[in-house]
Image (tube, rainbow, N blue to C red; front, top):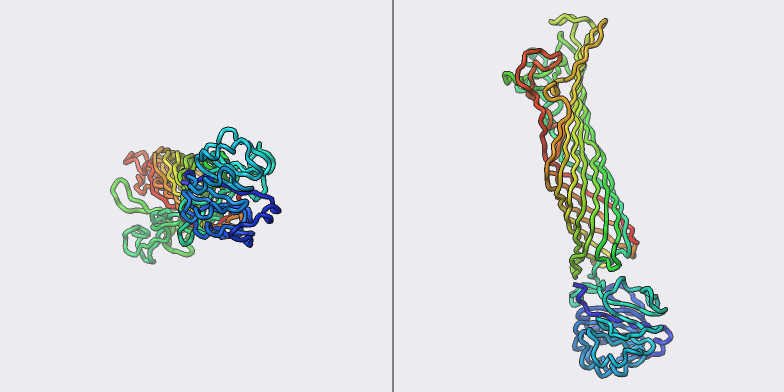
Length: 556
């Protein structure tokens, strides 16, 4: 954990003073390269333990920090030049020799401070650094003095900047945690492996989504038969020659677009506790089908099973010399939307990434609709005498909705390599789904010269199941987000990702069709009784929403 690292010290000196302060290792190192970046002369280099190269050949105004100090450091401590920093916990024995009278700009850091250091605490000299945890009583700051203690709120700034509030100009206040992961050095890629730099205050993210979902299955809804098929067998499922024109497979499984916006911020300056939320919407999808007697001489729709005797039947729409007509079906998926609000708390910050815990609220909403229309025009010269121009219009309509809300738990893990990063975000929400099914139906019989007769109910929706049914159910909804991206500077990120949401219980329109039909309930209703079908039940199935995204994040 970063919180167990040694208190490091920073040597802050005016540039002119540094130029006049030679080092026994040479003065041709005005800058130093660490973690893949060119750093200023007055800088902090942290490793635990440090790379030997950073110990043996430190330049002017460099910081050496280790826990504990390596053997190589012991040799350089007595000969440390002006503005050098020696930091260790505990301080090496050799350091004690220089504590009583360190030279200008010397930094002595220890936790706790050695007894010899206490003698000089009340009146440290210009540019002196005394570091201890806890800070010794009586520590006095003056312009140019660097004071290091714990706890600390913030991060390192550029040389010469005043970091904390309520301190004299030129004062640096510093303490743990540090941004360099413990154990980073010694690895072949240590110069590039770092904990990701977190935004100082907050972040805003936009993603463009391209997702799919499991298709919704529809039963066979429109059929046809070859010419010459008898009226008794025309369009009946299971009879020779009958083929399905629409239904009997999955629909609404095409790619669909959407977007997701997220925002968050830190509630504590040490970036341990934060809050974040997001909202997403995915476009709906729609499929339509139409057929008429101009294209198919034999046409049937709404196949069903007679609930009284179990025989397969259908509604005949077109047959030569009997009737003509048409049918149209619209199956629609509405927008899939969701939003959440999480508290985010630091769990671990190690060499291989930062791990945060998430706890909060999650909402998901999804709905579908299915409309089936049949228009029948009897032949005036057919087997059943009718007034010319008479027609029958029959509609069935289904509307479903799932509104899920619950308590969400999750993790957010992020690791970096140079400017590249990977983010993995698993979550699960435990909650309640409010599920609704609306069934409606209408039959209109029109005869020229007479007022149209209007009846409730169509073919699949009759007086036995018309209306609204609701159901509440508990379920667990798992989710996963995976992102890989690149960071430009400190404020801009671009990334691509994959997301998946699994909803185990969704009400879908096609699942609500009960093809068991009491024909006596088809309008106009016959008062003969019989089984109460189709039934007013709510059927559910699972659905997976998944796909890819590209996005941009602004950090501030």
